[in-house]
Image (tube, rainbow, N blue to C red; front, top):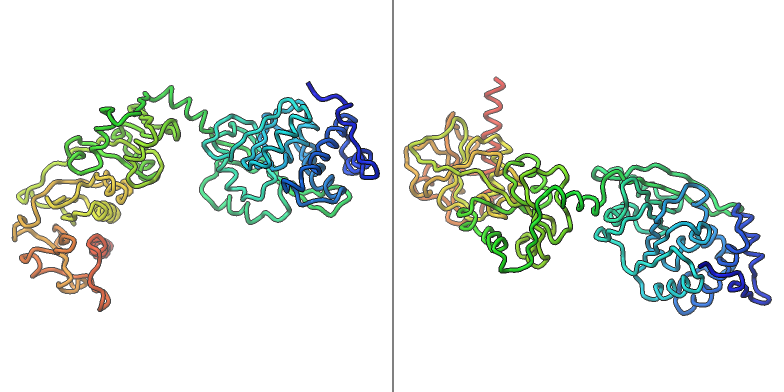
Length: 495
C-alpha cells in the first residue's frame, strides 16, 4: 500500500514549503500530482534531517537541492522510456532511484549501495514513504552480481567503461545503461571506442539543460549486444556435461593436480592451459584437443560455440586456485595433446631449420617454441634435458603456439653425433652475421647456465652484444638466431 496523503503533511513554519517546491518543478517542466509532491517533500525533510549526521549531500540551499537533486533525477524520464526493473547504481542517498520511483510508481527499482550509513538512511526512507516495488541491494555491484535487470541508471562519477564492465553480470540482453553525466565526457567515450570490441552500442547521446538554469547535462544510453552471465550459464549447463568437484579427495581433482608437473603431464597425455588468450586461441584453433572447461564454481561458463566434445568442471574456488598456479583467475582448459613421437639422429632433419631444445626452464621452452612458430620452423626436437612443452608455464609462454609446430622427442644434448649439420650458439663463438646456413640443419642452443658441450662449442656462433653484458637469455638468443636465418632465407627466395 502507498502512504496516504496525511502522512506527508509535515511543514516547516517559516521555512521553504511544498508549494515552493512544486513551483520549482513546474518551472522545470515537470508536472507532479499533489500526492507525488507530498512524497518528494517528505523525502526532502528526511534528507535534511539526517544530512548533518550522515553527510548525504553537500548541497544545502533549498532551491539548489530541488533543482540539482530532485529535478535532475527526474528529467531523464522525460527524455526516454525507462526500463524496468531499473538498477540505480551507487544510489547514495537514493538518487535518482527514489525520485524516479515517486514519478513512475509502477516501475520496479533496485537501489544499489554498499556504505553502511547510507544504507541505514535508505531503509528508513523506503519504510517511511511506504514505497512498494523498490528494493535495496546492500552490496557493491560487480560482474558476479547476476540478478537480471532491464536497465541501469547512474549519476556516479566512475568512468563509463568501468560501469559497463561492472554490470555485465546482471544486465539483460538488449538492456540499457543510462549515464547521467556532465557535458565533458568525450574522453570517456573515446576510451570506450578505442578499447577492445565493445559488447554495447551507444544508442543515445543527448545534451540538455535544466530549464531556467545554467546547469548543462548529457544523457548517454548504451544498449547491451551480448548475453549476460546468467544466460550464458543456463545455456552452458544444458549444452555441456557438468561435473562438480568439491573435495581434494575427488579422483578427478587428484588427476588434474598431477598435471602441474612434467611427469604427470607425460603420463596422462594431457595438460592444463591457463590464461584467457591462450585458452581462447586453443579453444577455437584446436577444438578437437579440448576435453574440459574448468572454472571456479559456475562463474565464467564455457562459450556457447565451444566444442561439442567438451565437459564443464565446476570446481570449489579453493581447489581451482590450487590448479591456477599462474594466478590468472580465469578458466582453465584441459587439453589432450597430440602424441610426441621420438626422433633419432638417423632420421635426419627436415628441409630448412630444425630447432633443438635442451632448456630446463618451461617458460624458456614455451617462449622459444613461440618464436619457432613465428619464423616458420617446421620441426622442433625436444632433447632429453628439455622441460615438457605442455607444462602449464610452457603452454602459457607459447601463447598456444605449441600446437602449431611439429614436436619430436630427441636424445640428450651430449648424444648428438658430430656429423649432424648443426648450427650451434655460444657466447664464445664467431659473429653469427658471418654464418653460412646449410639448406637443412639443426639450430642448437646450450643449456641455461651450462651452455654447450665442448664438442659443439668449438665451431659455434654467437649473437654480438654490448661489452660488459654477460650473455642473452637462452630463449632470446635462439629467437635472434631464428630471425637472422629467416632474413637470409627470405633474401634467397626473393632472388
